[in-house]
Amino acid sequence: MADKGEKKEKKEGAFFKMKKNIAGKAATSGIGKAVLKKVLDDNTNKLMGSLKKVIEIHVDKKKSEEIQNNLIKILLKAQFQIEKKNIAPEEFMAVDKPLRKAFRRLVKLNDPQCEKNPQERIEAFEKVERNIKKVGKIAGTQLGSFMTHKNKLKLTETINFLANPEFLNGVWSNPKCKAQREILCETMKNFAPPKINLDEVAE
Image 1: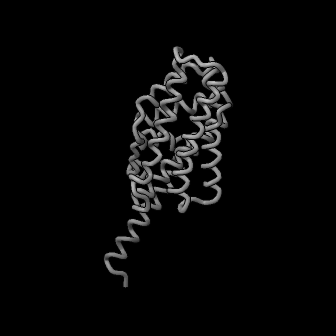
Image 2: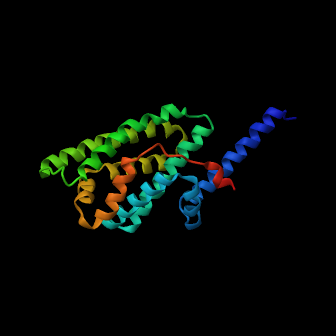
Image 3: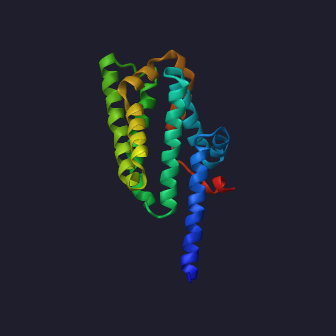
């Protein structure tokens, strides 16, 4: 007969599994995306929204939705594992330093007064690439044990897409992206670690 400790562990396990399943569906459904606006803090929602729009303008809608869904799943995966105490918050927060470096450089590159020749711009975007790939490496190391091979590939593909200097230079040079790029840079300038309330997905 199971003791109280075992019953509690089973109950908590079932609760986490339920939240994980609901959140997974939320990341890719229309109704779910409305729920995610409650799960994620305002600045993270704004960052995700403006990033999605610049990708849609510069590439296409299908790619923008793919990247947004992948990023949301990564964030939710990290939060689940932190709540389950499989990952220490401070260990996962090692992504913060290279991410901030990438954001600061991208914000600077959006400043009209920061004009650079084409080669200097490519070199600046290559520095951004290195920092974004550091973020991916840290995330992959921390989450790898809890991800399927398919999801590991999605993480790598997402990071490689966002870090690509040609993509970044294209977005930062595309006049059609200007309005959304301004919003994106503003959210990067005010960046704070995402606040995720998983209790919302279970309500």
